[in-house]
Structures are given as structure tokens and as C-alpha cells.
Length: 364
Image 1: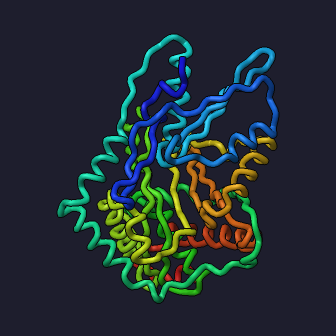
Image 2: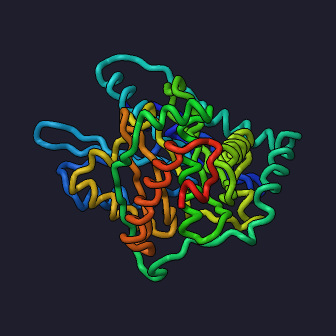
């Protein structure tokens, strides 16, 4: 079967309307190459070559060995999220075994919706909401870089050790989700490193509920968020974070690229909570061997200018949690380790404290 023909999603291209508004449309089939031998350099070249946005957003390579075939693929995040990887693997294996699957052009419909909604009152409401949180960024401090001229990237992973019973109890008392708690802790931890109460970063929202895992698409949204970490009760702080996060979720259809030219907000700090139901399809970091690590590092370094400089994930794995930090070498390993220790300490202190306790005395 033609791999590229399996999903219309994988034949997606990017087009511009009036030179300013990107829209995804169906295009030609993605390129497929065939190699007769496994070679690490071939893999590195395959994953390092950038996409031609206006011709393809996915590509495939089949490598033939003496007794097996290996399929390698690379799909741009514009049309492919973490859950899509699991969907693609499952459906592809079903087709290889002679079965059939149903395909959904869900994201093309979503892209059309975003383009259509830009002339409605809802679009204006979203614009006003973002103006209210992004119009005053003067008192937001920048995360200092230890070596601004340093190049390259690293990935650091840590086990988060804390009282799981206390976590569940706190979530129930505060009536919040894990995502709100971990985002709040990230915000406060970040404030300790920028030496200011107000922090701004990008939050990544999954865009699917746990029952919506049947199609290939990009449903995640990158949204700017501003949190004030001034001294107040833990309950008030959690409520403020919750209101802000759910606010940006409510208006997640507003394209971020329209906001940046006007507000020039921080784009190089990103936070993402990865729950179990997504982590099952997103275990690349957990199961990467030495060759895979080399490939990842090569890709990160080749796309240096396009990679978020400080990307923090709280990654749920069963009943355990990991902190995964993708970071530019402009930040020292000591700073990354210090950030981990601070994050873990603040998380433990918050979940073991009373909601009426104030931040400064609880987290000092």
C-alpha cells in the first residue's frame, strides 16, 4: 500500500491567504524513500532535513534489512500530535494485517473553522481577552542565561518524588486538576529564577479529551499565559492560575502568531503536563537508546533556531511522575538541576500545606 495515501492528513500543505493567514490544505503525496541498508548517517540525514512547508509536511523512509523492513517517518507538529503517533502505529499495523480502518480529516475541518471564525464576535472576544493579559508585560523579568553564546541542546530527566496520597488529597480539597497544580508550581518555581513576581510563558494544551484518540491530527494549542506569583493564600494563587489557564483554553482557537507581532511576549519558555493517556503514545524519551539519543541531539542542534530554549514537561507514568527538561546549553546543567530541586520542593510544600496558608511562609 502507498503509505502517503493512507491518511489525507499526511498530504497536508500550508497555504497563505492574503499573505498573512496560514491555512492547511490537501496537497501531493509525501515523499517516500527506500534504502537497502541500515545506516546511522542515513537516519540522521533523514531526520535533519527540514520540511518544505509548501510541498509536504510529512515524509517516510523504508529501510530493508536481510530479514525485516523498518519504517521511519517524520511528520511536522503542525499536523501531528503525540496521540497521533499511537493512532498511526495502530492503524498501520491493522492495515498490514489485512484489516481496514476509518480515516478522519478532523484537523482540516478545525483549520477551516479557525479561518471562518476570524470574522465573528467570538474572535473579537478572544482578541480582547488576550489583550487584557498581554498588554502590560513591562514588569516581567527574563530568565537569565548562564552562557548566552553557547550552542546546542540537552534533555534532562528526573523522577519527581513526593507524597502521592498528599497529592490526591490536595487535588480533592482544592477541586482542581493535576494540570492546574503542576502549572501553578511551574509558575512559582519560574518566579524564583527570574527574581520577580510576574511570569510569562507558553502553555501547551492537549486539545483532546481521553476518549478522542481515533484520528491523526494536531489538536494541541500553544498559548501565552501570564501568572502573578505575589504573596497571597495558596487557595487564591491556585484559583488565579485556574482562571487564567481555563481562560486561555476557552479562547484557544485564536492563532498565537497573530498575537506575537503586537505584544512581543516570551516564546522560549514552555510548560506541558503530559497525562497517562497521552504518555502511552509519547514514550520516546523513556525508551531511547544511544543511537536514538544521538539522532535526537543532532536534530535539535540542526534546528537550533526553531527549538524552544526552555521546555519543561511533567510526564505522568502510571502512579509516578517525571520532570523532563529540554533546554538550550545557554542554561547551565547546574541551573537545570537547581530548577528541578526547587520544583520538587515547592510541589511537596504546596500539597502538604493548608489552602489558607500564604505562599511566602509556605514556600520560603
